[in-house]
Image 1 (cartoon, one colour):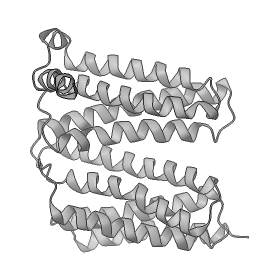
Image 2 (cartoon, helix red, strand yellow; image 1 turned 90 degrees about the vertical axis):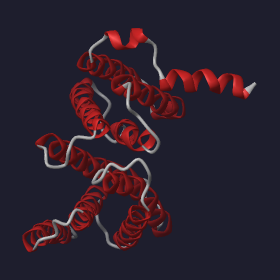
Image 3 (cartoon, rainbow, N blue to C red; image 1 turned 180 degrees about the horizontal axis):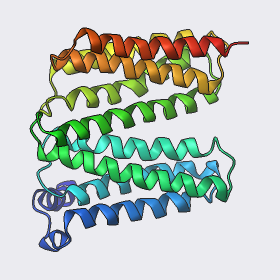
Image 4 (cartoon, one colour; image 1 turned 30 degrees about the vertical axis):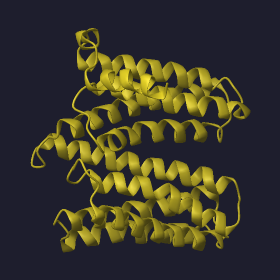
Length: 275
């Protein structure tokens, strides 16, 4: 019975029907963004107790719409890596919305930001799927956009986490779990291999462990949740930036100085907020 259901799905994925190709890719992007924006707007009219219903729907719909937008050339590991950021961004932004007062003044800018961001992430996934040469500006732009949204998503997730006001063990473990898939996806985007390299997994685990320890440290300091999230997001930005530069053979003195300056500046500002 299960094989009878899986076989048509595999055939559909390998060779989508011709009618799906009749719409140009850029219009498929617009259609996908429109559907997800309407879904997100609809979800904002319900209280957080309905999250158990919307989260699975957001994951399923966003995943399917990313596939519809890209449509061809998705292979092996790309079924995870190309879809991770649009899906996790949707879920994290939905959770983050409930930290704000629920009114039209916040709802409309929120939905507009989501629509623009989701479109940018679809373009990024498409560029990674096409496999643009690393020396092209197109790939560099896609990598930068992915890197920016990774840092932004990390901030959202950390903010949600620290707003729960849990103990240091929970915070540390949660930070490690949240960072690991983001770090692995970012490191994977350096070479865009179809198989997951052991080195990428090890570096991803190292970054997750590093941020996990920092999450435990932050739990003992009387930071506000937004300040603690900003410090962790800046740490994620700096540590992953140094790691990607090292793996890409671009770890120069200026690069190290820039990332460490960002981390030191945010850390200094965070300390000044204690009082």
